Length: 292
Image (cartoon, rainbow, N blue to C red; front, side, top):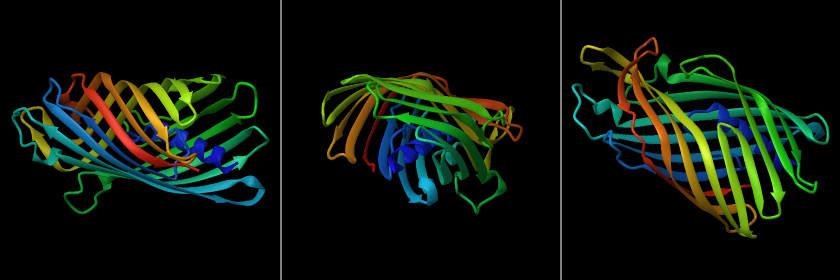
């Protein structure tokens, strides 16, 4: 029961929180490393991610879930630019998640998630621009015991850090249509899973991803203006493998390529003033996870 509720939460959290996705499994712990090697824009990106979630059961099979996720993003701009880019080398994103999962009936659960966020270079003491808030409401239906198991998540997510501050809809639908095959349809993730043996999973993914970080030391970009933040969005296609050490413990690795990248510096009004990265890149990630 708690496994389904926590899976619901993490699917929702993936949708509403920037560069921190790929968590559509019921993780209580995850450690992951990601690398986008240098591309034609002469940009290299690396990320270390640490995730922890604790479910607390309350009355009537409902759950409170408290968790946190930290992302350390190393940004290496190797080409020469007409401004000092020393403050663009290291970014930090810290989310603290508070969720309540309400069991409506046998199949349906409703969920609300409040996620305070710190996204900053952290070169100075904390300031207003470092803080953000994400709010998510959704519904989750899980049918694991039918002939072809399905999982459906629907909802709305509001993120105060994005350019367009309006609630955005999301959907996630997964179906095990064959003992060895399942597909995932939705936004921001679509994919296909193959289970050759009990402990092995091969998966393809199409993912939309991104992040937004406050620059505590603003960057003067020649004549175009003063940059106060950096944002990035990307579409990725990957293929990966997961080895299940036990029912709750796994190692995994993925490789792929971005279909597009858009890394830009923004001013106080969130206008694009300088493009850092608009070229495709290879993509690699590997990690260790513990579920329930």
